[in-house]
Image (cartoon, rainbow, N blue to C red; front, side):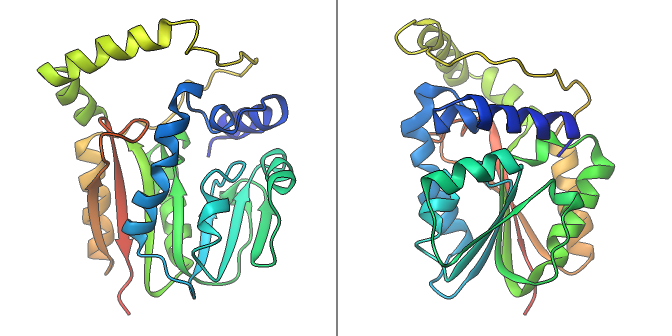
Length: 241
């Protein structure tokens, strides 16, 4: 994650109370956010013996419930995020590593890896490649890694140019503009203008690269009932056994 965005999430964790807002979503998306869990669990095919790594776990909105489905879970994120996570939940099968993933040393392998709503906060395509390469080196043979909630600009344009997309956008703006719904607290964040932009071409390029390196790689749709399900996609990697 870029240093600016990394510190912005640290500020959210320090200054905001609503876990949905800390995770960078609208408060009105709390119900939809809870639907992420079954989607992730199904795509990763989590099992009770799995060792799970959650990269960018934030304050545990996914990590906490996922910890009940696996043997052990390791979470990596800003120290402020992990501090708030510890106030929400503690367990024997949970380990937390503070720091930016690209700078954290991890010397073990995991059966499953989750990195949700993180890739688009990297600086550029080169940093995306470094990030993916480091994460996939931690994946055990036969393991699965899900890089979820990736904004696809191409998919967003297709959706907004459709009749369904136009109707959704009108309804969304009406909902956000309602004072009763739009109660997101405002905190001071540093603008981060140098972030990678994902589109069809880049996603296919990523899949092609890692397939050539021996991984199975798939671009998966998100259900429309997820917070940004109409415009985002997931990338699933499977390491051969």
